[in-house]
Length: 95
Image (cartoon, rainbow, N blue to C red; front, side):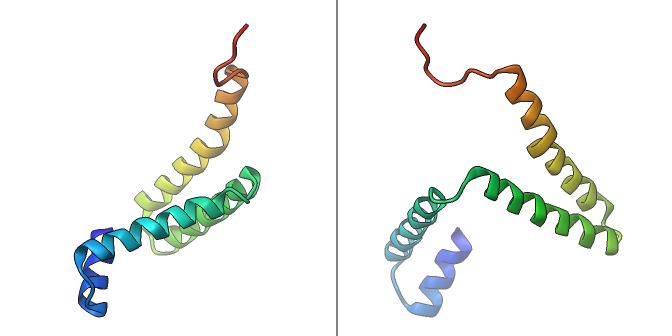
């Protein structure tokens, strides 16, 4: 975020405060637009992007990055599924 602030101040001549306000507004808009997507769509996109990173890392012989990508895919798929099965009730339920 600080790199974006520096770029806005340097290239557009706005104050640092204005740059931070603009960044916060943009972040809020991104979060607001995410609400229209289904979680399954976002999960599919995330897995696809992570797979691309994995493939590129292997091609570049960057094994640490490849392992990190596999670890992320494991966490967002298998571990999340196991966690959901173990705790089917979440939130504030009153019995």
